[in-house]
Image (cartoon, rainbow, N blue to C red):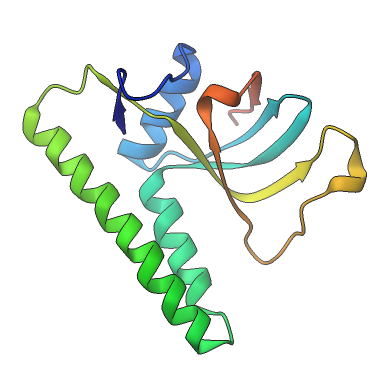
Length: 142
């Protein structure tokens, strides 16, 4: 989370509401976003779920050296995010904080030039994007 002065974030109240629910309540929903002609679809998750999921996936990498390096790096990012979130709670004024990134699990991607640019699909594909780049969203509540 960043202050509005640091990053330009979306003014889309619906998207910000969904992001807040994902971050604060663990809410997950299928979502598709359009970014300059590219389409990304997956399950909307909060940043904590994203970092924890990536760390779990990293632990499954066979190359232990790479796994250890990525575990350290993503662990540091997760810890910094959690510390920032706690500091925001301590201020008891989150009115000047907005999400600047969106996080998806089980993501699929179709590039602006068509299906030839599909992102590889693994057991779990993690995706993170800048909210300010999103042109449109669709989601389905069941």
